[in-house]
Image (cartoon, rainbow, N blue to C red):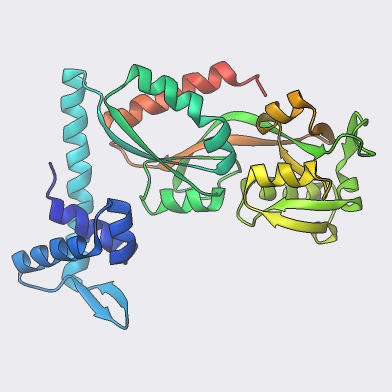
Length: 302
């Protein structure tokens, strides 16, 4: 219902990029430019300065952006109030999740949610933890689900459940028969690591530091951004790695990998993260409530 031109302008102003705004809005860049120019014609002033392939807000643009923020908050308040009266739960929610959660936790949760609320459309963006937190900070997504602690105190962080990280080795490896392995021994073997910005990597490095191990001492064989690629590399005998136990059910059942507990145990939170805004669309409130119940019922499962 809110003015489409204002929504497009607000997205461009937030991202300071017509290209990124077009991607986020699922529009062509010429269509985004056209909407912004229409708004500029309405106000009879430029809202952006365009120089050297970069854009910045003019004084008028900053004023429009500030007012747009207030308008969208009021619109959300109105929308929620009416939906509370009618009981309607619909709309579009944009979620972001780090890789482990997107691949191994969310499919079941979102599938069950859609059965209960078929009129809610969910769009999912997948990135590492740093990327998801950045999307929440920039209002690119409504809700993030991440696998590492979040340090931004301006965001709301709710721990969903605790996840265990374990050492994975191929069958026949000299550590495969161990009940647990001291974290200090990770440096003794070629190691296959997640990319920088990954929640798994951040938690592992923090646990190593606490145990008195310098991560620079790791015998880093390779860095991979895919969980499946890491598991395949370990299966092929290219090194060992540390991954969430929740991602290993298939491999453990087939016997292609062996999971060994670390000493001390390496644990991390799965958390919801969102803006501290007073009003949210009712669909998001329903999803948060549903997710909290899901996490409560699965908190003791690994």
